[in-house]
Image 1 (cartoon, rainbow, N blue to C red):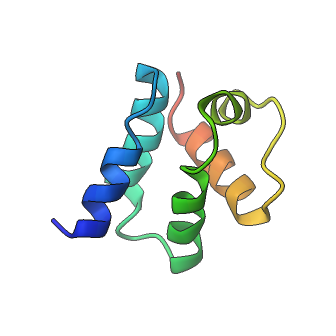
Image 2: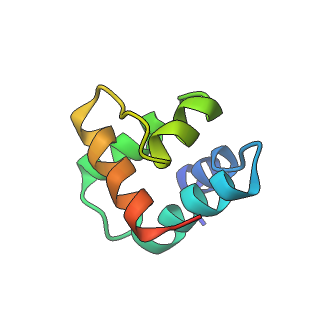
Length: 81
């Protein structure tokens, strides 16, 4: 396992099981095949606070960054809570 992947996997461990599952699920299922802008957006997304991530994933608002917003939509539609 690469150091970068291990770091991302660790950063996917959040305060709630639901966030862990949604973020970790995208990392495990889609990260390797995702284009570079999506992988970069995912790394940036993990810098946001849990309450923001949770609200966005529930469909309450979206990140300002276009690539992050697209990724939130992808995670939300692919991983239902």
